[in-house]
Length: 194
Image 1 (cartoon, rainbow, N blue to C red):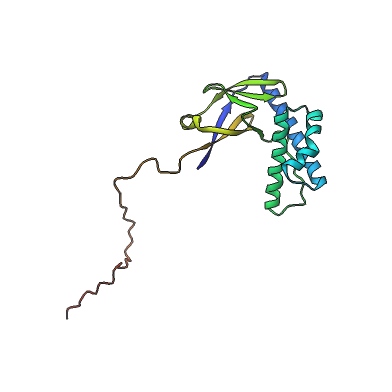
Image 2 (cartoon, rainbow, N blue to C red):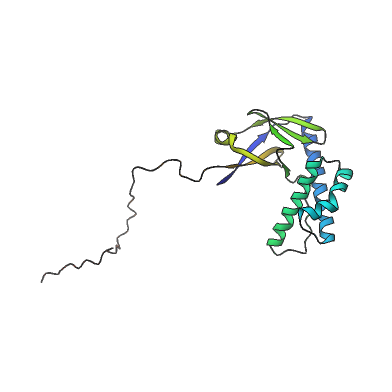
């Protein structure tokens, strides 16, 4: 089973504008790639990559992996629109929309810091989370999404957890809900006395 953990980032006054600028540039690049894909009538990662990758790198100044992640965001958006039957819609992304980070452009530095690629290079940011997230922190694998909500930054990380029950029940508790219309469960014939 997959769960999503919300981890809060605590950027300082100098880091906040850099994170916002990175989000804006990433989403501009994704909107550009969506337009190119829509006009060319292509939807697959390799096709969009072939048409838009070089321009994304040159025009928007993103790293190679950030360009790939922007194209990936477009592919996911196109697939979502297609599933809804909206094939004639070109996706556009909000300036502060989510940025997808993977292990090449994100790294956890212990339990309280994360390193993210930004337009200004790698940035190490303080990280806080609750006890629930802390118990599952070691299971974070793969990509995380950088989200900006209500003036705060969060990382949404996916974790795999076992599907088995954490404990095997040994005792049962019955609850009487006041049901009075009971139906017998057996076909045993009870003789009537006259």
